[in-house]
Image 1 (cartoon, one colour):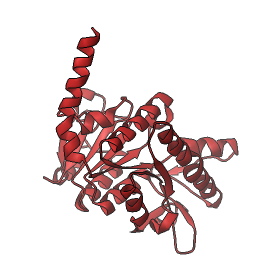
Image 2 (cartoon, rainbow, N blue to C red; image 1 turned 30 degrees about the horizontal axis):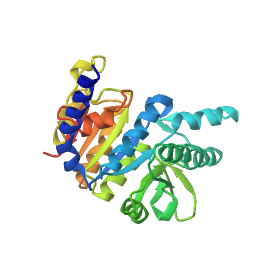
Image 3 (cartoon, rainbow, N blue to C red; image 1 turned 120 degrees about the vertical axis):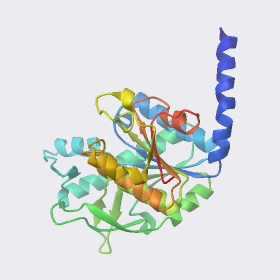
Image 4 (cartoon, rainbow, N blue to C red; image 1 turned 45 degrees about the vertical axis):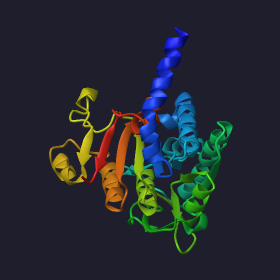
Length: 286
């Protein structure tokens, strides 16, 4: 039985080889959030996968949010979390907590976990090295940022030295204020600025579904020119619209392809990138 298992493992590795060669020395940006960020077993699997990808020569950038951790910390401080249009209303007190939780606890926990898996990671935020310059998104969300400028010098330097840059989704303005930014938006902007080979967004769904209640209706491939029709049909709706808008923007800025995958499934990143079948929805220009 062990021989059969070993043979199967060897065959899996052999089949992964052309995919490894395709991504080797290329940049893959992973947006990390959802249940995969909360469940400890899933978190361990994700970090292990990122280290594996780096070990075989793929340049990995991890972008993370941390909404549940922010909400939990605010609750401990007896501060109510308020949302409008799917975004956290972020006043002066809230942005201090966002900065503390994202750039502090969440970011450093991920860096430490990657290190414990044998990888090399460096924790960054959009405030470091003038990475993500912002202006306020609007008047009603407070310190929620709209990205105006990207500077990837420090990320490129980290990648050249085989580090995994772990980026928390906050930015700054010219007055030194901190801004909370949607993690999908940051991941897409980072991927576009780096001209990444791929952007992978980990979510709590199987991918884009024709029927949101039926995983068997997964759409495996979408051309970005088709997204307006899918929105009109209601197939892309609600919180999926800004996520796919971000992916579309990344592809227009030079990212080769973007994926939505199910972060609830262990090793979903490897299944998407290193197998013929994949497991989620791939977006590309043509």
